[in-house]
Image (cartoon, rainbow, N blue to C red; front, side, top):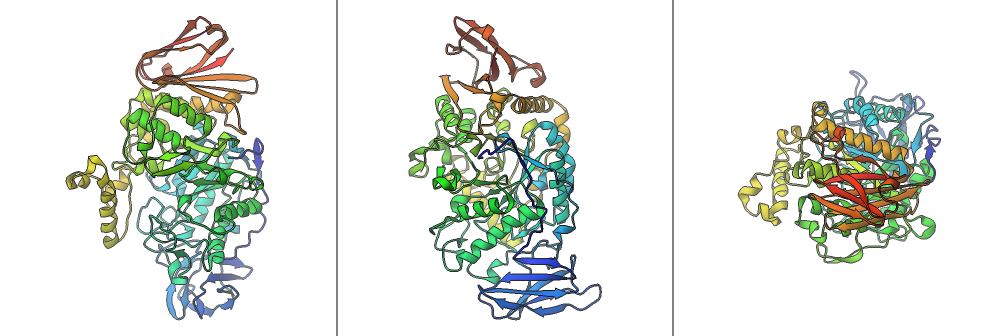
Length: 634
C-alpha cells in the first residue's frame, strides 16, 4: 500500500457525515431517501411507537428516480419500511440495521450518538501494516462484535497492526461467511447492534490497531436482498459473473448504481471510523466506461475521509494499473491481494496440483522471483486461464502487495477446510512463517494461524431448506473436477455447508494456544512481529526497495534486505535436511550474527537449530530439518 508517512492522523471524520441514502435523524425528525426509478409512488411506513398505529407518509419524487422526505417526531430506534406503488412493505436497501433479520423492518440509527474516544487516533503507515483477518462469527465461542472486542488485547500482544473483518453486512439465517450479504449498510444482527461494531473499532484504535472491512460489491446474496424490488438496474446480465448478474457499472442508470456502492463505502468509513476497505473479487466488477468504478471509488474515499484510509482490492489479474497513482494513469488503489506467493509456497510445501495450482512450480527460484517482484505472473501464459496473465509491477512499493500463507479463501475453499499447518510438518510451517513475516510485502495472517489452530475453516451457510439444498449440491459439484472427488461417494464426504456442525467446527479454541505445540508457535509469531516492528531492514517496503532473493538450491532460498544502515539475510530451508553455503555473504561468520532461528528453544518443543559456521569468505549453514535463520550483519 502506498506509504505516505510513518503514521497518519485521523482526518476530520468527526465532522458531520451527511448521508444521501437511507434514514438519518435530523433534529426532531428523520430524513428518508431511496432510489426507485421505476416506481410512481413510494411511501415510508413507520411502525407505531408502543401500541400506536403505523404512520404512512408519501415521499416526494426528485430527479434521478429518488424519493425523499422528512418525517417529524420520529427518531433513532423506530422501525420502518417502504411501500412501492402500494406493494410491500419492504426493508430499506440502505438500512443501517435489521434487528429482526434481513426480511424484517429497518431501524433508524443515529451514528452520532456513539461517544468515540479515538479523537487522537493515528493509523499505522501502509508499510507498517501486518493484517489479521478474522470472521466475527467463528473468532470466539460467542461469535459477536463484543466478544471479538474482548480478544483485541491479545492481538495487540501478538503484534499485528490491523484487523480485517470478513464481511459483516446483514445476511439470512444464523451463520454465514458474509459473502451472501443482503442488506449492505446494516451490520449483521447476529453479531450485535451497530454500536457494538463501533465499540470494536474504538477499542482497536485505543490498542494501536487499525480496522479494515471486507465489502462485497460484485453481487448480493440469493436471499433477503431487496435491491431488485426497488430497481431492476442494480445488476446486469451484460457481463457474465460466477454469481449471476454483475453490478451495473457502465449501463443505463449506472451513475445511480455507482453512487449507491460508493455511498456504502463512505458510510462504513465515516459512521464506523474504519481505516480501510478490502473490495471482494474486483475482477468480477466489469466496467467499460471512461473512468473505472474502482478508480472512482478510491478517489471518493480518499477525498472524503483522507488518503490514509486504505482501499485494497482482491484481484487475481496482477494488474499494476490498479495500484498506480492516478497521476500516472492508474486507479489509485492502495493495495491488492497478491496470491502468487501463497500459491508457490503451497505447491512447494503441500504439493498441490489441482485447479490454479497447475500454473505454479513451487521451485525456490520461482518463490524468490515472486518475493522480488511482488507477484510472479507479469504477462506469461497461464495454463489454468489459457491466456496471458499479469503485468509488470516495476516501481510499485512492496507494501502494495498483500501476501499470506493462508486466508479465508485458501482454507475455506478446500473441501475439508484444512489449514496449511494441518497438512505439512510443523518445522516447515515455522520456516514458512519466518519467510512470510520478513518479506517486504504486507503480510496477512488468518485467525488462529499464529498458534496453529486445530479447527478447520469450513464453508458454512444457513439458508432456508430449498435454497440450502441447492447450496449443498452446488458445493459438492464444484469438486467433481478434482481427481480426489471424482466419485459421488467421495463428494458426499464433503461437509454440508447447511449443517450446524460445519459452522461449530470452524470456531477457534482459544484455550489451546496456552499449550504446546501451539504456545511455541505463538511465541515465534510474537518474536517475528517484534523484530519486524523494531528492525529497519525487516519492516515493510515503503517504496521500491532493494530486496535480493535467491535460490542456492532446490530446497532453500535466501532473502537479503538493507535499510537504515542495517543488512539482514533470511535463509529459509523449506524441505529436508542439508547444508547451504552462502559465498556471497562476505566477512565470514564473524561478520554476521544470528538474530533468530525458527528452531530456537522458545519456538520448538524439540529444538534443532541450524548450525552456522565459517566457510572461507562465506557461511555454512547445516540444517537438520526445515528451518529458517535470520542473520544480521555485525
